Length: 369
Ligand SMILES: Nc1nc2c(c(=O)[nH]1)N[C@@H](CN(C=O)c1ccc(C(=O)N[C@@H](CCC(=O)O)C(=O)O)cc1)CN2
Image 1 (cartoon, rainbow, N blue to C red):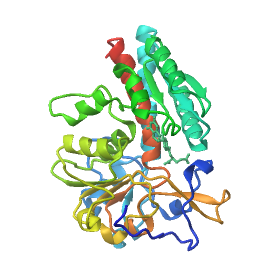
Image 2: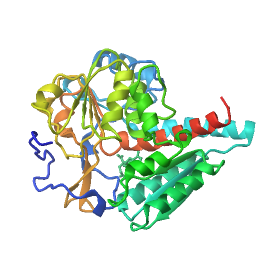
Image 3: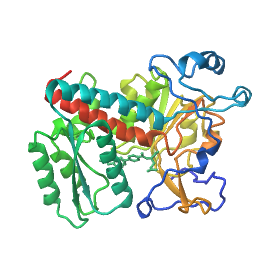
């Protein structure tokens, strides 16, 4: 962001941003070591965050297990929105639905993933998607193409999957190599199999009142699902989305608007972004800048959804780096009422929403409710 000062807020003074593509991602993150973990609410209707005192009153009845210490009542500290656990719960719900559908109809949902090139991070995400499919009972189909493959070869794979009745969802892992026309490739995915929700027709419908997209992009959908499952009210709230990418920022803003929030998008040309962010009740940050959003930019009690996954150098970590979000977690956790960690926040929800979209697609195609 041109007008923002980037300053690292990690404990390591030497921490530096690393290019994501050079490194295999890993799960350990020292940032999480001081997180208070609050287990999941089992219902999406009961608010998790009305106040600390009512939170404590509900503790024994509402949550599976809660490890909130007495310290929390005296020290201002946000609830950690546990995306990893929510995603697990959603995968379990999806597995039950898939089994029900298979028993009733004999149909098994199928997801096709096309990976072009040799980015390690993309390969990891694709592998994790396949593992998640296996876990819930979705058939997965994979095509791996070299980085110098032609656009036509990618289009041929898409056509093949568009015509295959055992495939209910198709996704092309992004980013594509630079020589490819992303728009042309994403437009080729049949709208009824567009489980990433990136087809312009799906995005267009998302933007219009009174129209329904067949699919909503997975990461923004995961952000909203986290807010719902934690009982965080969106209606009437001031929401700020930081970043305006086609994959996250723009659809996240559209979704928040559909939920009746008043939405502002902050981007690289926004003047005084801190002032706008400081006014927000809900912040979704998706810029890919480590620790950019500081504690002083946050209104006390705001809810922070951090979509950034940024590797920073960390000599103390076994792999030499760790993942941090766009938000300076150590500072923000003291000001916000709830915050997603990185890793373990929005990331796992992306894959859970992909499974959910694939199941919906199979149900819609086979008229199964
Ligand atoms: N076609 C698509 N391409 C890309 C998408 C997408 O939704 N569709 N999103 C991202 C990458 N992505 C899925 O593809 C993705 C990113 C991160 C995670 C995740 O679980 N992250 C973990 C941390 C990573 C780790 O330790 O392995 C976390 O945050 O806890 C899942 C999926 C770009 N491309």
